[in-house]
Length: 496
Image (cartoon, one colour):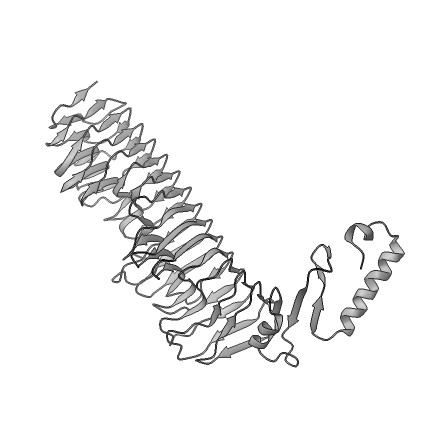
């Protein structure tokens, strides 16, 4: 056959004749089609095989997948629907194999699946796309799509439904690298864990992944995160994953087993993940939840949390809209709004050498000790050298309990909460008698060399409160319209 460039040089009648020949060949050929033309032109050295599930030559999806083989595509027609009964399942074993469903094709999990998965991917660079994949309420410890130890797996444009509590939608296991989970819809009956990425085998690493533009809503259940990335083995690792532009709503009935975030990243039995990007996501609460985004890491973490939105919709937020720990993190241009107690907009817990800047906290808990941004040191280590700058914090409409715009609390005998910089923030109070714009509190540990400079504090009872055992604070007054601009019980405070 001629190259694409050559085709452009022949006349219209010649091109029509060639097109007619290809059309006739397609009609005459059986549903098993072997092609030697790649997209965009022909290449005799490339073999691209497309196999159709036609019910005659290939009577099952598995036989279609096997016939497609290396670099081939199995196409499931729109009219096809199948229920696989345990222990039946599908496996994509060969490299570069694509399972592609035409709109409306359904792959259904039957009853009785236990610690077994509906579709398992063991071949590198394999793809599942366009399929409607449904779970069964009787399943336990089961995933609809499962991959482990493979390179380049792609899960895209699929619809996942009916994932029961403690089951999984897409599960990426130990040793998976260069994966993509993109543009999937996970809504109907989504009580379990929609996207679950866990490095759970000694001396293995999950890395270089993208979770992008998925639509996820969880309902009911007991231990849900819409997207979860974690390690649970001491020598496992997880790094360089981007979670971006996903639209999520989380509304589990109970957080008794943990979870209950739209995105949760952590080292739960293993080291904290590193170099995780969470950008441009939307998270909406539909009932009481722990919060929106939780990234808990052991040094170094280097998290990048930017341009996200958490809308609590006046539902209870138990922990925080954004929870961060580790070192070298950066959180900027995020929005938290419509929170009710007891959680914070930002909980900065055992975080050090990090930056929290240009975020918006639009209403937070008016419970006792509620805060817009909470910087907390509650265990051995550092919770210092952070920069909290240029954030906008708006108090809730109603007061009556003591609450703060920015609260720094050192609360462990061996924690160092020194060197924090609180600069250029806008804090809008509500005139309540127990409100404080910025609170420095050292119960245990060390808190010294804190800088408070050029913050705008409006309509709070106390502007800045420096408690006992807080050392060597540098206070440079900004625009402070509090009833009492400064209460200083610290030692060595420099006031300008």
